[in-house]
Amino acid sequence: MSIPAFGLGTFRLKDQVVIDVVRNALALGYRAIDTAQIYGNEAEIGQAIADSGVPRSELFITTKIWVDHFAADKLIPSLRDSLAKLRTDHVDLTLIHWPSPKGAVAVSEFMTALAEAKALGLTRQIGVSNFTIDLMRQAIEVVGADQVATNQIELHPYLQNRRVVEFAQAQGIPITSYMTLAYGKVIDDPVIARIAERHQATTAQVVLAWAMQLGHAVIPSSTRRENLASNLKAVDLRLSPADMAELAALERGERLTSPASIAPVWD
Ligand SMILES: NC(=O)c1ccc[n+]([C@@H]2O[C@H](COP(=O)([O-])OP(=O)(O)OC[C@H]3O[C@@H](n4cnc5c(N)ncnc54)[C@H](OP(=O)(O)O)[C@@H]3O)[C@@H](O)[C@H]2O)c1
Image (cartoon, rainbow, N blue to C red; front, side):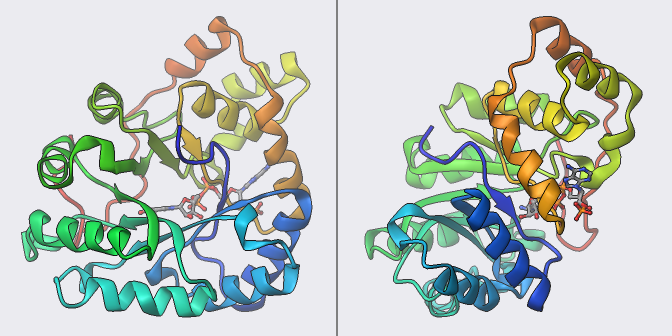
């Protein structure tokens, strides 16, 4: 995979909270950070990175272009603004955050602009987020499957998104699982708790290990240093085929993120 298997999510984290979270995460060994223009925290993340003293070359920074910035004349200027806030001359990965609402901007227009941003060196890799199979096909037509570094989608034990995963994997496009912990909902699941007990692990570690073992990247978030530390240890946990089968059986089509104004018709 050309993107890190484990990173830090920063949705909803603002001001001093996000500064503290990024500082703690970097001190604990996190090196990949996921943000977005709409999160309103790029400047604070830039500050926390600068204060940390961790060399830029060790970091993998992802941002996402908001839907208002998809037009050919807006995308690159908006990414330059993000770079200024993040205090860097390039990000490692830039994603189209959501499909363009009502198709207002054509996939060909924003994917071409995104590829141009890469050609200019403003981003090392490009990708998409919340893309359906049909939208992925359209993006691939414009830039080629090998140029799409990931499709970042909601994926957790209660929404396993198998059709999108199968299509992406057939194209060689890695999936990034967002809300892998279902925003905390999976923590008290009794089936997962039993698996966790067998491994002397936490339920969060089991779920993160499950997603990584399926080949997906994960970007869990936490405001608590102890959770940041224990979540990172999921990289060392190996689940058995029986554990994986039990987790697969938890699918229940429970989508948590589908904002009416921007959500596509899901697969
Ligand atoms: N592309 C998109 O459209 C999109 C959409 C949503 C999210 N994302 C990205 O994905 C990232 C992850 O999603 P998310 O932050 O929404 O949800 P998440 O990572 O599934 O869950 C975060 C929640 O789980 C809790 N938690 C974390 N570790 C825990 C542990 N070890 N034990 C118990 N509770 C724990 C956190 O509470 P505490 O703070 O108390 O630990 C927080 O409430 C986001 O931050 C963002 O970067 C992308």
